Length: 305
Image 1 (cartoon, rainbow, N blue to C red):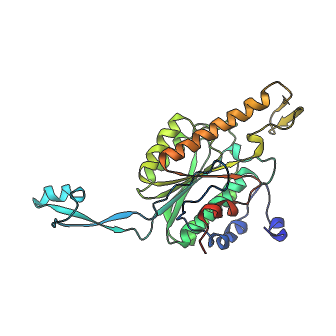
Image 2 (cartoon, rainbow, N blue to C red):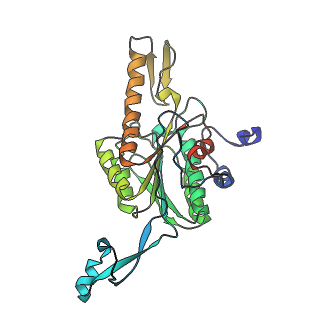
Image 3 (cartoon, one colour):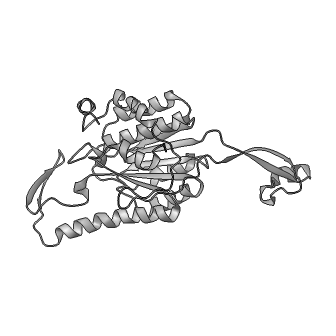
């Protein structure tokens, strides 16, 4: 990123012009990832299926047709065996779920997690619409959400970007379970969709895991974990005063084993998500608050020269 671009961006907020301008960088991406060696430890890259096959019509059964494609409803109605005919989808829905909970409005270096998530969402949305896919999704916080039905064209991307620019942190201090988020997407995701979750994944529990597994059964899924270094390790041993605008706590990192227990808790939480990605053949990416989201996405979705 050039010095001019850096001056035009804020570490705590995003502008519509900034997100719209990412359409140029999106031309370097394609949502058909190849199997590559992970750029960072912990990345897991799956084979995305790409556009799927959608039902076209039913016709009378012909010798050699796959019996698994028999259309039993038409067969029962007409009394003659019919087969389903499929064709490759010309487009597919791409649903981008962006975490707008209070925990996302935080960073100790680089940009707020929310700013990173917004830039990631914009890059993916532009990439999808440039490929002819329909773009939709939602922004969610603890107790509510804003939904965007998948549509074609720049207007579908811009309505998402405008919502990202105007979104404010919710007033709930503790992230709730993400189960409701996954359950909503499961009900709206058309089989064969690409479903993207951009989040710090706080509140990911067993109920969330069950809903996510159901989504992955019929869709490609990309999880983008946005994180700050302080979430994985405590600062050097000492006494610190921390505040969130409402309360202040004293933190003594000199206590025995506190550093190790804190780091282990984080690693266990992230390891659970990585393992789930391997089991369900989902794609896993990590983006730190001091990384360039375009570079992170290019490591997997970059166009081959």
